[in-house]
Length: 512
Image 1: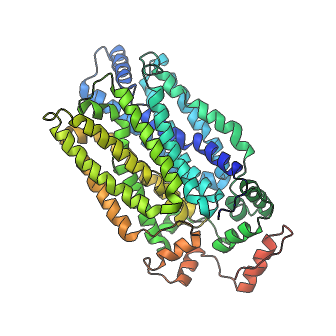
Image 2: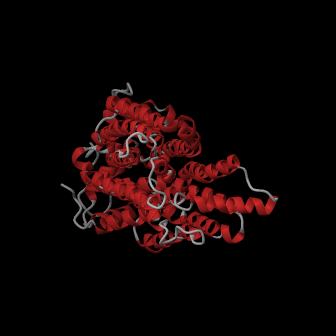
């Protein structure tokens, strides 16, 4: 039973947070695809105007690869700096302040053509990456901390859904009838301002994470009000009790650093699992398809005029698949969706390789290639597309979560950069066999998760820690000591501390 009488505020907070955050990440993955020809022409004309000769093909390819992949370098910077920001400003305020990066990037990129400077476009991509790096850590953290455990998976999937919606929106606005023309492509980047402004208008009126208020700011009254607002009920003593019980009254526990987290045996396999899932999330090949969909379809033999509309189908399929995943994740669980998603990707990557290799011999094979690409995208969005973010929020206690998201973000963005930079060269070297590389990565990820990942649906953070205790080779007692390295208190002291923390006039219960 989900104990949320009036979930409207919870939904508004999720949608608003995601619209100005993960939506922009998805949008910036696909927005460079449609105007690629015009941007390369802009690069060539600028180069010729400055140096008196046209840029050679290899240099132009390198410049374009840098433009695409530099987004991930900015993302890596954002992932690294997010921990002190969310600690000092909180989850909600971090999302708000992050819009400064988005607006700055939008202005730089949209005015680059007018200023005749491709450096402005590249710099804007870096800054937009910083925005994405911060938001892809702060948003899942915020969503995991404001949602009841019964709907934590579904609410966590909002991140993935809005990434897909962002990709689809970038594809729609990139159509020739809208902004996909030589004179209008800067508007594609200027449109980034709209979601940022909407978030700035709405988010200040929504509560901060109650877990953050209770465990890091030690403000019980504000935490209670936040719980009341999100859950739509007056009596939130049970929720406050549950948070404090799970975290052993972490008011005396400082945030764990990355080095401390890596040294903590009790979370060793959680960290490894996050690294594997985040690495596979990027290295499985989906970003290659998002970045270079047009060239892939062109290689598949699709007519040039038809490509933008065929590309549009990829965004529609991934959005539908992500919504489907959000609807079934609490029934099926994280584990089958993740393993099944990667497994299906292996199958369709193999078929795609055969199809692309033999397409010149059979006239209908290009259509099979399109089907395989759509099937790969659907398989990805059903599980691997959003669940890694959910798991990172579920695996770790409050004091460990910022460091865990920094590790996850670092792996995420380094892998993103590698794919964006190297895929054109991999495609050039391996030709139609390039997708077998991604098939092998998906197979390795599925195999690892099959043997290691426990199911986490409807489990508290403490129960998830218990599920990993045996694999980490620590007893439950040692698990708790590692999670809560502050001086252990007697049960009487714990009860006294807890009772003094909850003073809303309701009947109090100590921690047993």
